[in-house]
Length: 187
Image (cartoon, rainbow, N blue to C red; front, side):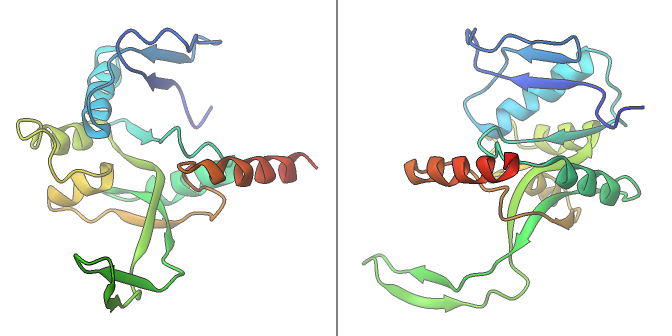
């Protein structure tokens, strides 16, 4: 039995670029103005397609295009027996600085117990939908990822060690690094 039964790709309304290559991939033109709204709309679509509120969902950010199957398996293995669910993350390796209004360091923040959140993040569909719905009227203010919605619902997601190679391709120089990682995987 496959660990992932179906993939739903949420895109902006009217976006016709992505065409599914398989019946196990559904493209939904229900993206919203924010990540949280897009995820909320995607969860609603999953439920409309027959998913149950108790089913697990893994939410992944397309900008983290270097995720490896072993990382997904580790997240699933850690979360399946957990009552809440969790996310891939890395312990903060660098010194963290806080900047004042003048752009100068005004504090060094203790990095102990601080993690960098990654995706996928894995929760039950109904739990995540309800956590997001509680903040929909306010435009999902304060929701930066799925785990933050779960936290605002009073629950504590599990932190599952991720990989530094699961970085977010954000800045122009990230493309060269992503290319190097991909080339190392096929070498």
